[in-house]
Each structure stands twice: as structure tokens, then as C-alpha cells.
Amino acid sequence: MTESRPVRVRFAPSPTGMLHIGGARTALFNWAYARSRGGTFLLRIEDTDIERNSEESLQSILDSMRWLGLDWDEGPEADGNYGPYFQSQRVHTYQAAMARGVEEGWLYRCFASAEELEVQREAARAAKTNWRFDPRFRDLSKQDAEARHAAGEKNVLRFRVPEGEEIVIKDHIRGAVAFSSNDMEDWVAVRPNGMPTYNFVCALDDSAMEISHVIRGEEHLVNTPKQVLVYRALGLAEPEYAHVPLILGQDGKKLSKRTGDTALGDYITKGYPVDALFNFLCLLGFSIDDKTDVFTREELLQVFDLKRISKSGAIFDTDKLHWLCGDWIRRMATPSFTAAVLPYLIDADLVSPDASADAELQSLVSVFQERITLFSELPAQAAGMFGELPEYDQKAQKALQAEGVSSVLQAVAKAVDASSWPMEDFSATVKTVAEELGLGMGKVMKPVRAALTGTLGGPELADVVRILGKKRSMKRLQECPSALEDSAPEG
RNA sequence: GGUCCCAUCGUCUAGUCUGGCCUAGGACACCAGGUUUUCAUCCUGGCAACAGGGGUUCGAAUCCCCUUGGGAUCACCA
Image 1: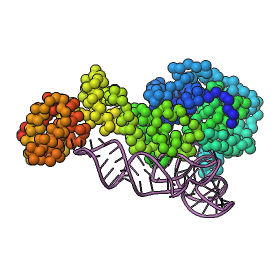
Image 2 (image 1 turned 60 degrees about the vertical axis):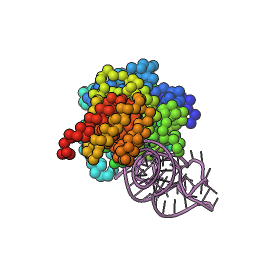
Image 3 (image 1 turned 45 degrees about the vertical axis):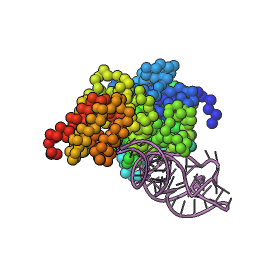
Image 4 (image 1 turned 90 degrees about the vertical axis):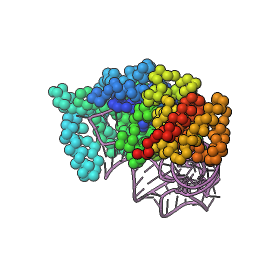
């Protein structure tokens, strides 16, 4: 296990959709490994599926990576010495290996149609046995094969999987995993149009880019022996492997769109704090020790180790994610919290589009900081603090209709009017009023809160009054529906 | 069905490699109290797991075997 190769890891997405949560975590582990070992993290775009590629997907993947703070040293928009980093631009680099494979015989031409092979596969499965290959072409002489190929007969290049070979993969997470070549099929390495397939190209690229550690999802574990065979055929140095467990949905199956949001982008637009999501992704299949579950990316890099990635799949637990979000929000400094929340306030038309996270807004917003889980929740919570009069919800309306509320509100308004500003102790002022009226605090506070905020929950009233200011506070006390004594009965 | 992977509280996990310190620890969720004029926060306490069966051993969550259960994969997609 004396690995002297410099650490070079890669994340290799295909631009066929948004960045998946699972992909994001894989990228994160790669990044963390590189950053914690002084290695290089590179991005390789696997865009050989021309039909499904899109520039839009590429950009959204890059954006998601940046949002998560996973910066890459080589890749799109970051040149390195191992480019190009788009597989579509690397096609010419595969020619030599393909030619060599045909020459040496570990690639052979297969003239069977995809349809007829599908029939064979089906038959094999029905017979509860494993399909390996159609023997007709495996042993065709090279001369015959080349002749038919030259004559224009459509064919693919299959990898001639050797007989009776043990392929042992040393995986940093799973230990030694053994496969027998006798169970493997002669897989297609090159399509009729000359384009090589994933397993072939992946090995070629990883080798050309001198990838030292392949850290990827567990679903690739069964692909690995095929790739290992390519390294062996070409006499290339194999990378080390680490197959990380899958992220599962509530149903215990691989996280899919059916089980919830699977695109990182969805979490971004919904106002999840980055640090919380980053933290949470780490917690899925990784642990620092027996106690720590809240940590920063710097703290992660201090201790990151592939050995601490667990073997079993992890169910995506939104409860814990939300708890982490709230926790991270509470840890934020007020200015950055305000800045994070500002776009949502603008969106909700509570502040003007050119508003800034100034001191006034900060003091308003800060009283909600410990009461929200997502940035996007702020507008709904804080709406009552904007404008002259709030909207009164059902419970508030009911509270305002209770007996004697009108006189209570007038008395409080009077007391507020009489006090100095800013008020030293709103609570004490209200208490005095309550005593004068011979009422309990609750009886007074409830309608006052309803009048002031339009709802029965929320921040401390002293904060509310301070933020609203004397004028608006009094206006709300004096002009709420019941204070005007003309509110219609509950409908 | 073939191949491969996995198996500790409902969930994420520590402990497994290097058996004893484990009457199995932490966190989320849940329940009960407390703080708070309300809600939230916060604090305290509680509930709750080694899948089953065989071995090995003085001793097993930890090592071995079997069973069971779950998952991944089986494309001329990546």
C-alpha cells in the first residue's frame, strides 16, 4: 500500500441533466480527498452521448459545483496539462488503443445485431442463467472479420474477456472485491460508428489523466472489472478505488425523482444554506467521530479519510437536514444572514429591488434568525413587520374580538405614547397597564401581539415595537379592526 | 434469475480491521418537564438497536460459516 503517486482525483458528470444529490456528494468526497491531501481535483465532462447532452445542463452542473464550493483545478474553464476535459474532444486519443486492441486480438469484431443479441439475453435470463456472448464471432478469424468489415458490414468491437481470470479490486471502502472473468460478458467497447463506450473510454481517460484514485458511486462497482481488464490489456497502471455507498430515498432504494428533490439546484432555489447542505451531504455515509455532526468544510478537511466512509447506503433524512439548516442559520453573523435573505424579501415585494442589507434591515431580520430553517421562509414570517398595518390571520382576528380588547389596546397605546423612545422596557410598560386594568399579563399581551403583528406567534414584542417604531406601533394599536370597533363579526 | 455489495435505536451514525474499557455512545425525530407574555430558540430527562442461527474463544456487536433481509447491476447510456 505504498502509494507514491501524487493524488489526482476526478468527478466525471455527463451533461444530461442537473447535478444530482448523489453526484454532488461524490464530487464532494473527491474534492475533500484532493484538498486534504494536497492533490488535484479535476472535472471531466463525459459528453459522448450527443443525443442527450445540453449546454444548459453543463452550466447548471458547474453552477451547482461552484455553489457548493467545490472548486476544480483542471476541467472546463480551468485549463490543465491533461486536457481536453471534454470527452467529445478526446475521441482522437482513443484511436491508438482501439487499433491496438484489434491488432492484438483483445478486441474483436462482432456482426450480430443488437436485436438478435437481445433475444439471446432474454432467453438466458428466462433460463435463469448468465449470458456472456454470442460465440459466432468471438472465434472468427481476423482475416474474415476484417474482410467483412472492409466490405462495409456493420459491426461493433467487443472486448475479449479472458477465461478463468480472477479480478480483485482493492477498494478503500470495501476491501478486496473479487470477480471471476467467467461471469463477465464480452462487452461492447466500440460502437458501429467508431465511438468507444463508457467502460473503455473511462479507463483510457483515467489513465491518460493520471488519476490516482477513482472515487465514485457504488453503482459503478460492477463496472470496475471491465475497466481493470482494459488497463491490463494495455499494460497501464491501475488507479486505486473507493466506491461510496448510495444515497437512498425514504423507500430504501436509490434516491430518485419519485422520492423528492434530487437535483442540488432545487435545494439552492429553495433557500437551503450552503454550509448546512454541505455538512449534511458529508453526514450521509461519512462520520468524523462518535459525537461531531456539525462541522465546517475546514474541519472536514482536517480529518477527511476514505476509511471513514461507511459501507451501507444512507437514507436521505430531510428532518435532520432541516435541523442542520436551522442550526447553521443560527450560527450565521447577522450581516451575512441578512444578505442571504434579501433576495427572498425582494422577491416577495417586501423591500424594493435595490434595497441593501443595511443596519435597519439587519435589526429587523435578526429577530427571525432563530425561527427559520430556510432562507425562503423569512418573507412569510416577517411580512407583518413591513407596511403600515399587517394582515390579520384567523387567530389574531379572534383574539382581537374578545371582550374589552379595545380598551386594552387604547390603554397600551397611551402608555407607549407617554413613554420615552426607544422604550426601555416594553414588557414593564404593559405590565403596568395590565395592573391598572386589573388584568393578567396574558390577557393583555395576546391582543397587543395580535394588533401589532397580525398573528399570535413571533418575536418578543419589545423587539417588534422597537423595529416598528413609535408611530407605526401606535397606529397598529389604535387602528386594528377591533380598536376601531367596527369590525364585522367573524364570517 | 446471474454477479457484486450491504446488515447496530424509526433515521444518520460511533464502536468491527487491532475480540474484553459496550449494563452499546452521539445526533435527528418522537415523548415528558423547565425557561419564555406567544411561537421559535435554549436547557433537563425519557423512549429506542447489535437481523436470526450455529461455531471459535475464558470472553463476540466485534472473527468464521449458514440462513434471512435489503440494495446495486446485468445496454451499441454514462
